[in-house]
Length: 368
Ligand SMILES: Cc1ncc(COP(=O)(O)O)c(C=O)c1O
Image (cartoon, rainbow, N blue to C red; front, side, top):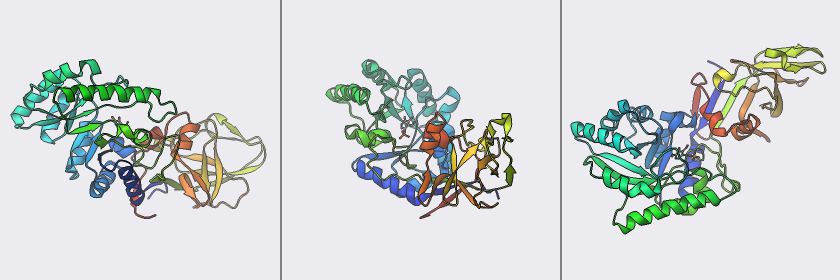
């Protein structure tokens, strides 16, 4: 078995889930589990979340929805990305829910649903500024009026998505909330009601309680990352990425390390190899700011990250082959989070987590 492992603590997932439940006690919770539950394992995390009482699941693609159904997830599943035509049958076969973006797609789905004698639960997506999904607020009613005539399309929800709920500047999110509220009022005044009203991603649940409505859609917070400015709540990362020291080598002053010789030793030192690289999803980096923890102490990764291995400068500390190396996680007073690694590599923690490849075995534990 490989030394490199991602350990996923299900009790921390539960604790993060409970924090979100407390923040929105009256709202239903749609757990966002797309992209392999942000790299943490689609089936394992979703099964655990279903057992905890999650009301809904949010995925990006029908393929993810089908995997959930095949694994025994019985709760409603909303597919968040607009499907192509070849994916429509899956909504009928696997009882998936769709976001309403296009009359053309809904019309095709309506005919297929006829064959399957199914009603398709649909969420009217209002584009309040993301300009990726949904219908413009001023076109929402007209769109709904056309779509609602399709007899197998059942409007169960209305939703929007925020662009900037994790930012200090609140103005655009407040503007999006106002646009969404105007649409809700308009439908309300026409006597049209939706069972589920949802907008809030993790940062909005924390920063904008008025955007909770009656369903929340947390992703990153479930996995333990609070991207709000205030960091008021004790979310804990559920993933620890570990490996073990492989080879130890001595390096003389002037000698280089790795491809393109990006590190040159200034003095005599010792280095060790660790069996993890960008082929595992660990970010390729040349800036030398990424660190790891060995025996409770931080050491820099030097040179470029290779596909399967990386190299650490351990100096003359008593590090031995087989010692545990933490790349994401904590050991005593030292910790390294996916947020830190992301910022060092000019990306976001979502990218670091979802990039972790299948060849990194996941180990699921409780109360680590
Ligand atoms: C439509 C939608 N809702 C909710 C989420 C969850 O966002 P977060 O992970 O920031 O909580 C996402 C994530 O990208 C999304 O695309």
